[in-house]
Image 1 (cartoon, rainbow, N blue to C red):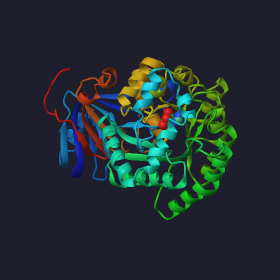
Image 2 (image 1 turned 180 degrees about the vertical axis):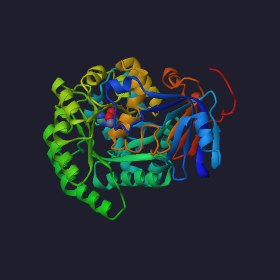
Image 3 (image 1 turned 60 degrees about the vertical axis):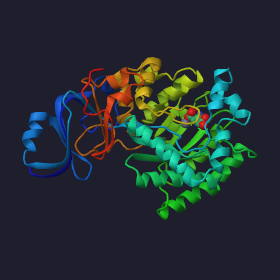
Length: 435
Ligand SMILES: N=CN[C@@H](CCC(=O)O)C(=O)O
Ligand SMILES: [Zn+2]
């Protein structure tokens, strides 16, 4: 085949498709056995989309007359889809390392929150920060996520709470969307906490009558395009009724519902999400049996966050029960000042060890199912013709090393590719080694 293409990846030992029949998500049986090719090659077109994937000799013959902007020899290596991080809070100022010390000494998340720390501490610092400062730290964080293999990331606002700062955060996210080679799904999370001096009902009214109409206006003028709406539905934060009102109002202006629920207390958040047609609910450490059945029926993804349970020493989300009952299980890093982790390979490892998922299940949860949680599994989350050329190449002959080597991704990952463009190349790339 003649023609000009952006990228040829040749002769990988393993090429992990994850799935190959246009599946929008995988359930337990599909997650158990992923589609993997041996000795395979892949072609990405000038438009950044995958044009061919298959056996190395077949691709070689098929594209013998073609030219490529770039070729990478993947002999002895593995190619995986770019990882999808379905839950992050990456725009903020002021770290909380002092609170990490308090938690290690026995303070709980809610004790710190109720004493005015936690989210309130970050809100105070984020309100004071300039847009430029927030953009620069955000950019750096996205680069670190990309180096760990993430090519599509959900990014929340939520450390402003007032309209002015929420918009400042959303502008920062929009700027990264426009200027950086990484996929971003943006989430308005103005109901992340009840601002000081307001009740939950007053805060919900402010969001419904002031924040959401402004977001609608900015969408129409093309200034800010938000994808999802989020609420922290939790005892002492937003109750079920305020959560319902905010999420419904967000849905009415075209946002996908994707919210925090059943984290520290059982709130019937999962039942509410199923009722409202939520695309995804995160956390679910305290979900009820009825809630699990409801989200399975509603095809609402459960975004599980192993770093939260680990960091806060909470009970683990019941991943096995959810999988057995037909829930679409996805994973996210929950990167935020409380859980400072950028790495989806480490998240997958924690999901395997602490939540008893298999490595196949963890990879499906961090690719196709995480893409589904963001409403993007048509274009992301697997290696299939017609999908975006978002890829990770690791220097190992078995893909499972990406999960097995806890914290080893920095050495293992050779290349991260977004739309067929190399966005990260490991310095040690080219030096063959066996680890
Ligand atoms: N639980 C609510 N939100 C975050 C934590 C945010 C923070 O503590 O700053 C979470 O998902 O873990
Ligand atoms: Zn969160």
